[in-house]
Image 1 (cartoon, rainbow, N blue to C red):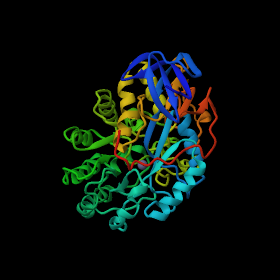
Image 2: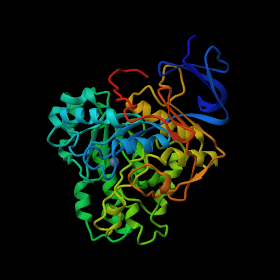
Image 3: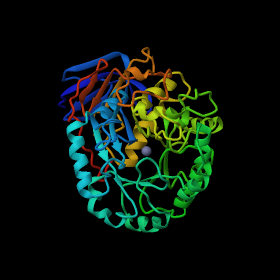
Image 4: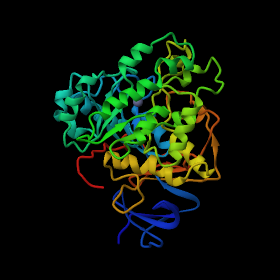
Length: 435
Ligand SMILES: [Zn+2]
């Protein structure tokens, strides 16, 4: 068998650590065996090799808001966080709601991204009937059922038409589920994180999820984004067979009962909001038990300036594409959660949801890996992060950042240094049925 090269080391394959060789040819994994010969070897004797992560939920703000993030800065941040492929949300300027705008963003990201990417189409009340125009260009569709930053409104009454229009689609529809009427009713003056939680209470999330579930069984895959509360979790756990859902590192690891300095409150302002401790505990427990299918960063950067003003004026959104996988790799190393569960929720299930040949160290899959030295844990500091958002809600948390990151067999990060050039990333299309 011919290989371009072979990677050898302690590898997390089939949910266990094995000393093995990975043969790579033409960007793909062509063989995984205990011993392989016949090509140049890269050996990692002291490190551990994992599949690279997939982030199904980022807002790279590009085009439109380069001060917050660009495809270049966002993808570099993702690469340093061990992510080989990101999926970008439609609320850019212009919003990706028609064929031309989607093509524009693909062209744009093709020039700037250092890792692979896909571009979601935003579905609103206006373009609901035009899905066929652009469905072949996108990995899936995003719907905002409650208002968020620069969002596209979709009325609940249109859900039945939506599912009719997506009948037999193999691509998922992803929901931001917060009931807009409920949000309206709970509006209040906000000066603290607790006000934000009360202004967008858990009931708004669960109500919205219930209204989506009314249409089950669904004609296409459905994913509920960033689950933030026990209420939503309880509903979804009963429907695990028919609906995918995700939670974020911030909802699983942060809560508002912690003493957060009044000056820093807006850094933690996000939609859906961070909740009191019991919600975080329940989400983390569910993740640990294998009951949260997907971890998604919902990387939503803003400038420090925008986040520094009055709490009520500060925009909602937390950055996290660079820290997601490293935070959880550290927790797994510490045995707080299993490596198996982290690889499932950061690599494997995202690949399955979007029908990608990524996320697994397995023959036929893209040669996307991270190489981690478990002895080199680092405390997260916004100073060394690469997003344009110069802050992290996880400041001071321990993390395991990868030393090497490979995307389709090419080194993107080597010895902690960026090697890939903007434009290295490829547009990912999931039109073939496969893996
Ligand atoms: Zn989002």
